[in-house]
Image 1 (cartoon, rainbow, N blue to C red):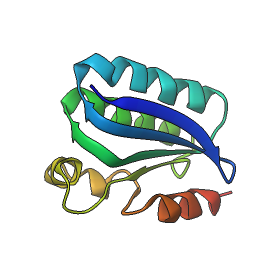
Image 2: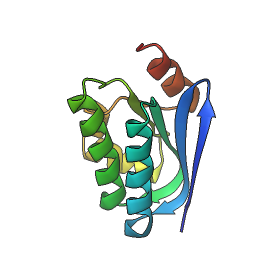
Image 3: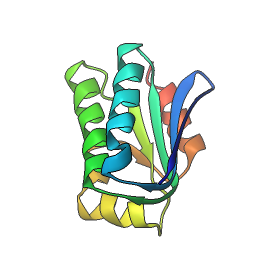
Image 4: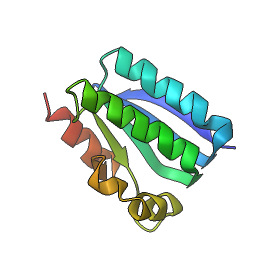
Length: 117
């Protein structure tokens, strides 16, 4: 099972996932994203240290993106997906890098999300 950490970095809420994430953590991840959206936060979901994410976790992230997009805040959520990782393969196969702003590093994601306001 993986860990979930939420912290503030440069005024951006970073939801960092490490380890393996599946249906056992997806509900918690979705709830954290919803809470951050409700608070008006700009969000970076960092998958760089996630060894595995399944479709339920991907669904939680896409749901969060759809929610900010429908609220007119489409640039308020970004993902960090490190190249050459299992999450990157999944992300690319599903074409999510074309739908959700995706960056190879946390710094790049934070910079991009910070510039949108």
